Image (cartoon, rainbow, N blue to C red; front, side, top):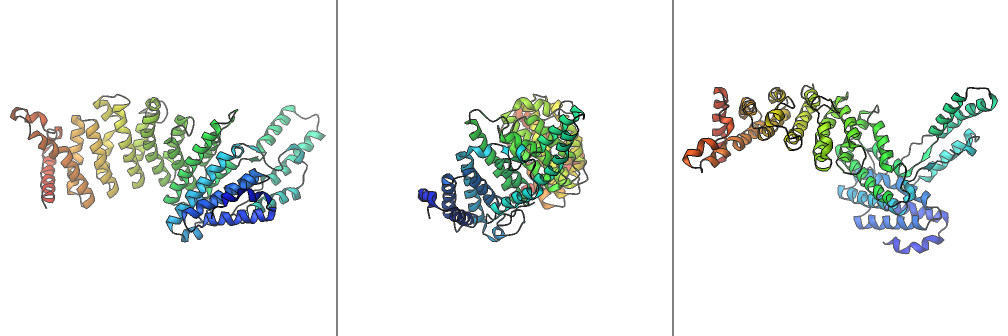
Length: 501
């Protein structure tokens, strides 16, 4: 039950017995009976790695084997089906928790996993090895991960690189009178093409590539990436000298490529990951440039990616307001003069053909408007006209019920943030008619807003001195026209009837 207490006995295990013990403990952690057993198996795996002759190799196998548990995909990572899909969710979470702690412990106890090094077959002395040698090496790597519960798709770039390097080397040897600049470029290309052994980055990349395209799994993958990056950052801070290229910077380069990949699911996951990472202060560098990359996805060809990017960008602004408020004046430039162009982003989302994106545009509006007064110190009139609020009118009559209901909340935030006469007029013209909406949820939300904006202030005004009542009445009443007044009367009567039962 507690194999970590038997760590000294692992020193005397034959290599075959060590591999079998490792495989059995990994299987227990992937499919445990309860969380305590999963954590005991993880402790045993850590003891095995600590007492191994080649701890890095066994630690890498441990990271690969723990991947299905971290992804909650069972024995076939990324397949969307497997033993974990049939496991109770409590056991899935228990296995994932133990596997994440196991991976973090490996990074903490074996910081060499965070360091890049040349992969097998990439040194200059290996340039002359043939195709068969590369095939044998790839098969050895496949055999190493057998029994770990993960399906691995082997990419054999080494075989292709050997084929490309051979003619280039022969040209350099046989054509001594060739162009020296061409030779320099060829040497740079060969250096860039050398495979790199980077276990920590490989784990993060597989988490992004193999995660099933479902909301719960994507959220779990994003949380796992943040946790592993945070653990890696703490380990790297203790290293002397510090790494030239931290894991976070290497992962950011991968995330940048993932944002522009052909698969819509990959771009959507990259957007969610980027939003989560920007919400974690200190995890990534250059948040302004990353926010600009996120804004590019607001014009993606796939509606789901556009919607995630737009809503995530608004949430990113709110997080940056608490951690890096000095960045927001440039990021919130209304016309894109600095970085993003908040007005253009909202306008494009509000006029989008898909309801999902229009709903995301309203979320973006709700996140940005409060920041205009608190951080940019704009006046009420300037903040009111900052994001072209006239676009809210058509959204209040949108065909989508979710968009209409979200518009009520956007008008409420606009009225409380910018209590101008223009805002009151817009509120009365578009919110009050929604109390008569055919959809009960929309009408109920509009009635709640009428109560907050009209009835509650009137109740407070009733307790004032007789000569001061007019000063305490809500400003929206003065901005109502005849049609809005009739809708207000109907809404108030309906709300009072519902409140009194």
